Amino acid sequence: DDHYPQHPRPTPQDLRERGYLDAEGKVVPKRYVTFYVGDYDSAAWLYQVMPYLWDDPARGSLPLNWAFNPNLADRMPVAMVRARRTATAQDTFVAGDSGAGYVNPGMLQEPREFSGLPSGVEAWRDHCLPAFHRWDLSVTGFVIDGYAPPMNDETLRAYAAFSSGGFAAQKVDTVGMVGDTPYVRMGPDLPRAGVPEGATALRNALSGDLSGPPPEPRFHSIRTILMNPTWHRDVVASVRTEVPDAEMEIVDAHTFYAL
Image (cartoon, rainbow, N blue to C red):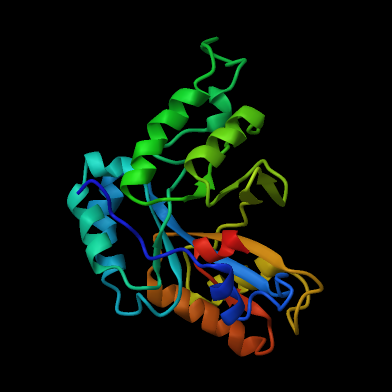
């Protein structure tokens, strides 16, 4: 199809009703966690791995953000469409690293270290725009900066143009804005290991004393790699069991960046 819409983005009223905004419209101090569920940046991962992870019976038990790179529609469109047709209200789709394709965007900026070519930032923006529209994407869950220079103002504005709902990157401030578009610094990867190891890593990512609310809202974008929904559910449950009064909210990417 020409367009695959996702569920509606949350409104301020939705966020108030969920207890995330107070009467004055301020964000309630909690630890807001969003899971970047990756890394579907090759067709092989979609056709070999996605079926048994996607069909896990726990899918829908908590918000997960599936990072199916939109470029994969050229290689494995049936998987992309099947995911959209069978998604639950807890399944959100975001772009993977780093949009509609795999690049270190800082290498598109002038001066371009190896090629000496003019800036490729506008070409990257124009490539991503139609893919984001077709798959109703407004969030880039992970911009992989690698060994490239940090994104400059031109590149940040390009991301705000095609990923207006928000993005996470490695070489940015902890939290920031490009016009009306929010961004965060990407948090750590949870290990591809058992639930106890995953729970320990999640607690460490949240850092500090988890008993009670933090003094101000905290935002944690956490990456997982080829882990199923049951594992995510059990990792979160383990942390909640150990720290039952932790003000930890697992939210979808649209809610996360709206806050």
